[in-house]
Length: 411
Image 1 (cartoon, helix red, strand yellow):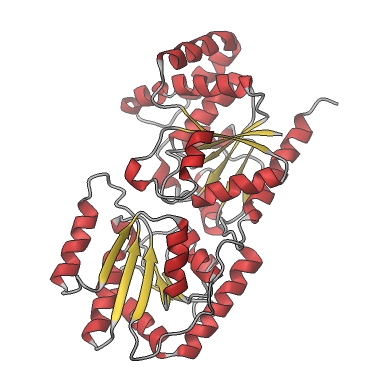
Image 2 (spheres, one colour; image 1 turned 60 degrees about the horizontal axis):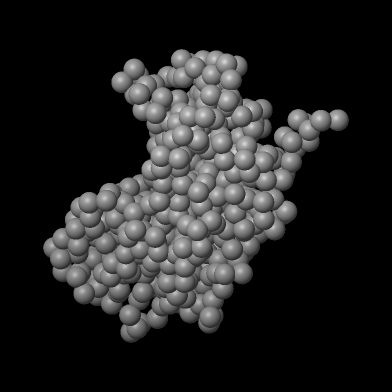
């Protein structure tokens, strides 16, 4: 079985899960051929495996002259029947007329992708994210007949239009939470494939191991709080900084380390966060680590007393799982699918989004109650070991790919 594995702007700062899933699929005897739309910005390529991934990945943008010629030739060879299917799909789009040129512009990279699929004898296409990459997979399917599937990681609102077409042609889809699945079933009724599997992202438990047992915070030591996520307003880093500032004002000695790069491309949000730390008198207590490799995340978790992420919106959150796998008590928000991972006061603490006061109270509870910190950390680790290991999604994906191809294989 040969799989074309298409990921937008790979390898980005939040793409460790994709690399884990790719490796897990290969352990299941599936040959994974990596494709991506384009390379990400250099400043967010931080993982130790990133250069290996780049070497293995074929990028569709920007195309060379030979790429354009190959794509054009593939379009010609596809024939009138494929052209008709392609034009009919574009005609059915729910996108406004002003967006049609962009959609039509994806036909050329899709034809290049289709050419590689046929040359490399690809059996199946799987695309992560339901954005333009899914349009490319859709068009490549219409040009080649090779079936495709998708994994949905966030709300449909994040991925733009043409969703009915992306979903109606898919052989199946994987959705990372029950919350997202319910939303998709409501909003795309009548356009969905027969199979909608639910499989969360997961953690490589062999890699996220502690070098020493977790020890809860006890005065008079300095409390270390770790957070990790893109530097984007929706990740709630400003709320976390304000919550920590409240505790410092109440006499706690705290340092907050935040890993993640500004994903705006302008540096505007990290500037805003730095200005906030200055205004709150927290410059010496908040450290912005920027984009870091997985090894640094593990090292930070090994030292941390608490992991906290104050997202306003979060489909699920692999970084929560990484912290839980290492027995660190986690504090998250009741946002999106997070409650499917974190059960309040059972394996972590949950607070409302955009509520620094509630977040400060939760942080204080874990700092003041060592027994609570230990209990939450142990329960969190058990949850991840049981339900959120990295091979789970690969198992689901491989199972459904094989089922699809058993149905279409010649007798």
